[in-house]
Length: 198
Image (cartoon, rainbow, N blue to C red; front, side):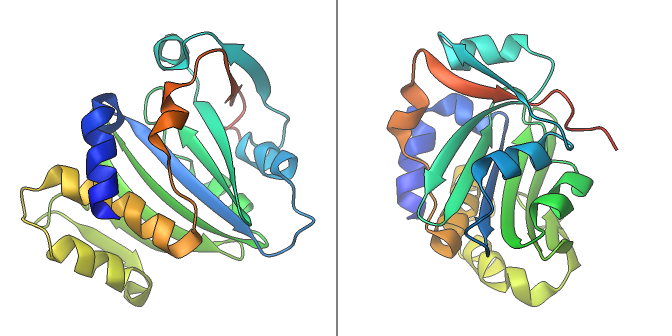
């Protein structure tokens, strides 16, 4: 699975520069994608738009632009404009009645991997790309297998470590990224205009 994402990052090299991938698995089937988008946007319905060339158009926005993906029992939200990390208060809202996995990075670093459930952030690893700087918060057992994946890679295999983050989320949730999704034109996107409000 790591090799699948290595290939994806080779094909879509912009993918390594800035993104936030959040996967939500609701425990309750009555939680809909509209409920999750409302939570993602700080308690307000987000703007929905069609972008002719999403990867190019999104960088003109000063707000998070996301693709929404549906899996079996899970929803994936890919913020691909600037690597805006989902704020903690939004993650705790998303995790009410759900499990949430998130990985994010951007031009200035911010390599973060996180797990939340039942309205609480349970574990977070910051700077996971750099073993000597990585720091762990919360229950270390939750991310033990992810740390083992990272430890099995060469310390300077940065593409492999990014790939491991996606592979671990897919192994945990069944929700992955298909490279063809990223080639979309005239694609629907969601723009979060209230995401950082408290």
